[in-house]
Amino acid sequence: MRAQEYLDQLASEGRVSFTKEELQAALRLSSNAAACMLRRLKQKQQIASPAKGCYLVLSPEFRSMGCLPPDFFIDDLMKRLGLDYYVALLSAALYHGAAHQQPQVFQVMIAVKHTNIQCGQVTIQFITNQDLNAGDTVLLNTRTGTMRVSTPETTAKDLLVFIRQSGGIGQIATVIDELADKLDKDRLQLQAQQSAEWQWVQRLGYILEILGYNDLANSLFLIIKDKALRITPLVPNRTMTGFPRNKKWRLAINAKIESDLGDDTN
Image (cartoon, rainbow, N blue to C red; front, top):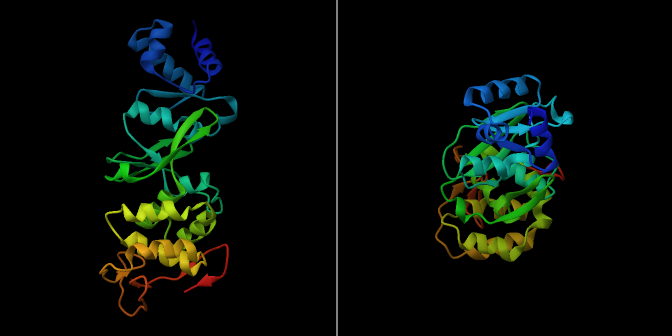
């Protein structure tokens, strides 16, 4: 079997990734011969490598991009890396219909630190969350298989926990505005009840309320209304001095909330 026949066979089986060892076994090559063949295939833009030892079969439409779309291979990649994961933040919001803010990177939540991956024009950004298993996920179908994505409720929570990685409070407000009709009040409330911290609940509740989603906001307020919460900044790591307080949500409103879908709100 020649290299092209091997790639064609993978494509016929619906596979988009392979390892060097799989190539060696299929073509009965030595390690050095396999390495030379992989270099030639990369030079011809027939394959790409998002991680050491892992290779993607590039169909002609994706060769100019130098990689496959990340949802084609993220599940394969994470299995090969041996890491639990879920697609998160702005990338997860996109799959739940919040498409107004197109993410520039593909965001993946994992439990341990890992260097971001650059594959052609595709950037995979890893966000570390030691409490990874606390996030509810769903398995979504892709063109090549499935991938694990945070639920709308976990996505909303994560956006308010990882504010910087989510593009800032203004972008988050726009995404929440788009995501709101996918949020289930009972599941959101359960997410808050099971949480070990309350700051994200305060911030999300406040944003939902000023955007007019009062049922969702009240479901969160029921969880924190009897708790002795200290005033926390709407945007962390920014001064609270001189900014108004929202007594209900125990927040210092140190930023202006702007949803691109509606009017600006203070």
